[in-house]
Image 1 (cartoon, rainbow, N blue to C red):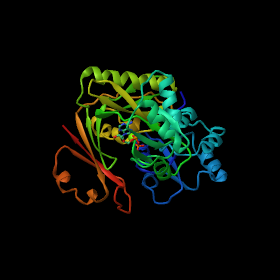
Image 2 (image 1 turned 180 degrees about the vertical axis):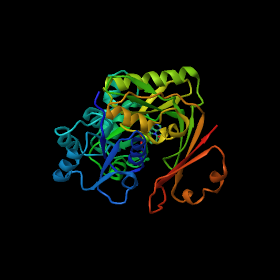
Image 3 (image 1 turned 90 degrees about the vertical axis):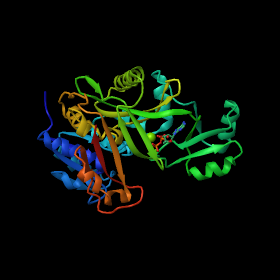
Length: 352
Ligand SMILES: Nc1ncnc2c1ncn2[C@@H]1O[C@H](COP(=O)(O)OP(=O)(O)O)[C@@H](O)[C@H]1O
Ligand SMILES: [Mg+2]
């Protein structure tokens, strides 16, 4: 088995930072490639390149300096991955990135492998909204841009009485997905790691609570029946196999009142709802991501403690007093110079 000595990471946010820290613990160097200077990952890495994702000269030099390449966010242009793939292995593979970059492809793929989603229809013009609502005999829907949505951005709630042209205008896109509204009981997610040998291991499903569409709190394990936990895990394993995952992905799910699981989104990378694994599991999601893409077997995803993870958003980062005094609180700050409302500045994991 060849184990990578230097891991290249596209993107320099907190996910790249925590991956780089996990790599360092395994004696693996990292090279961060990111368009911005001073980003969280650039502060903890051996090598750093500040360049745009279409800068072929910089990408080539980056590829020459690393053994394997991964990415820490899903909006890396596919052309960048295609260019790099010719030079060094890139994990997770392009198919997972492609599927998770476009909500229409994502939903088709999930349905094709037998995973249930909300009812959905493609939307390329305002008339599609009226047509779909009529077909479904529904009086409301959620419309999401096919690409680049995050933290609730790029989506609107549309009621039958709303003006379809205004709704379409607001989305500022040419391609969107119309989704039926799911009356869910709670939202959960499963993070799964799969290595180059095809072995996979999932963390227990967790509950996610959002505030202003941004993840606020994760509760591990999710307060659902063992049956729901095990179905969620099976779905993640099925997805990881079907997409031939190498690395870590997260599957976001809605749990309805009768315990049905409906898939919402795939993240092709470590996920905010997996941060608790750093302090509460034998192997964190970041270590498992690094292990998987660098040719090592994935480690145990078993939790040694139950946990609650609280995101520190914007000014929350100025209010650490209580956490600093709490015995079982583990504080993680991302080193972002500027505090902005809605910006993820860090998180705290409280072990139970
Ligand atoms: N079809 C749906 N029915 C009900 N609520 C939804 C639906 N889709 C999204 N939501 C709510 O909006 C949140 C954000 O949507 P999501 O598709 O996960 O986009 P983002 O990329 O912003 O995370 C979800 O976590 C959920 O609370
Ligand atoms: Mg989401």
